[in-house]
Amino acid sequence: MEFYLTVLLQGFCFAGLAFGIYISMKIFNIPDITTDGSYTLGGVVTGAMMVHHQPGYLILPVVIFAGAIAGALTGLIHTKLKINALLAGILVMTALYSVNLTILGRSNLPLLNLPGLFTMLNIVKDVNQNSLIILIGFVLIITFIIGYLLKTDFGIAMRATGNSEAMVRALGVNTDNMKITGLAMANALTALSGYLVVQQQGFADISMGIGIVIIGLGSVIIAETIINWLQVTSVWLSLILVLSGAIIFQSVLAFTLNIGVDPNLLKLVTALFVLIIVGIPRLTGRQI
Image 1 (cartoon, rainbow, N blue to C red):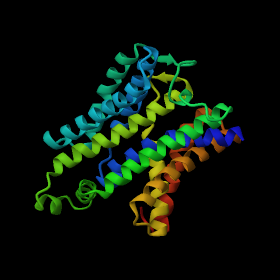
Image 2 (cartoon, rainbow, N blue to C red):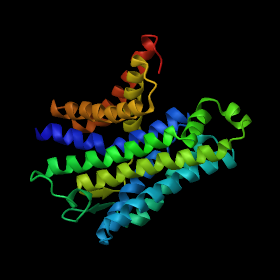
Image 3 (spheres, rainbow, N blue to C red):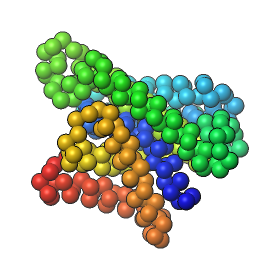
Image 4 (cartoon, rainbow, N blue to C red):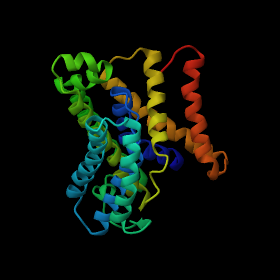
């Protein structure tokens, strides 16, 4: 039972990351590598503020703001300086390593026994079950906000920018601002995952974001495969499938470790799994 609870906790913690990748890659068609840095940024900001006993109602908006600034910087470099989006993300991600290390003050910061999101309410006695209930409520609120936003005129303009930038520009929409805003949203959501994971695992680490983009990408590809197979057009259902993709991805990784695979090979297994879920639709003629 504890095994499944841990998988669900990890899956829900990475929901923000999956939503962020979904916005940047599937709505705007931008491969945003800023993710590695903004995820860590969310974690180190959370850790630093918790150690200094800052209240939870202050930590959350600061994390969102920090992630949004990181994403907006990538957007500005890409749109205003006309630098390739991939390179812009790499530049910001590289700069964020120094920023994160400065904020954290050291490579690893333990947060055990400090009050946080998962200790705010004691709904049930079991710690993991209590954390899961709080986490589900938190993620559902985020999902509702994103879904509502994507259904507004602004959200429709965002989606249209990714589908046909030239057409949207002809209609008078500032596509550069849309991209900047979209990347800011995506990285704010990614930072939220760092915020959740740090509190769930009990420490912040400067290297926690290395390769994290592959987890978000894998979650989104799983969701996108299901969306294509089922011909889903609903925004709400698409977001639920992205959330499900994050849980499925974590389940596969947890199962891999549970059957005795060397943890040192986990990154290799992750890469192979993503390769498989990308390759199967292409081999069967149903491209993502």
